[in-house]
Length: 204
Image 1 (tube, rainbow, N blue to C red):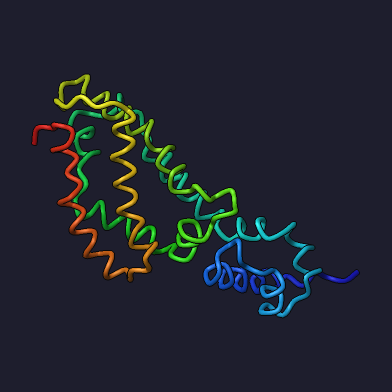
Image 2 (image 1 turned 180 degrees about the vertical axis):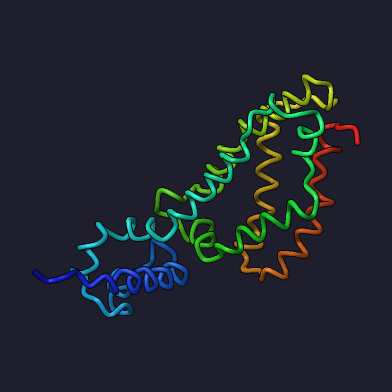
């Protein structure tokens, strides 16, 4: 019995990543992917049902990682002390730099998701990421408001708009191909721009 050549898989994925990053999902060619990987289209179809499944295979681990980060940061706010609840809104340089480091460690995959995913199930990735975080974030706000830690009244829809602005600012350096060093400077600027303590009326 012949043994499947598993060395083909990373060659296909690397070729696909380059093709998607250059042309986007919609304009990418499976024929070009196979040609550059040195494999037949038959070999590709033995491993992937089509172009979208191949695209998803490149980004799914990054999506799962992000979902896990969101889950870990979704501790029930009622279990936190007042100080911990206030700290959750402290977007200092260390916090911002953590996010940029995390995203830049997954640079190609994030650009695939943010820039080149039109035509796939991830076409609205950034919006859906914000949606997944909005409800939990609002629960943190409501708990802080209930305890009298914040004085500003804000609806969940309004908070969603602010979170969208926040994540757009985080993602824009990736979308525009900034280097990690350039993104670090943006991180410093964002700390001043997104003062959640001030926006939500926390006492310092």
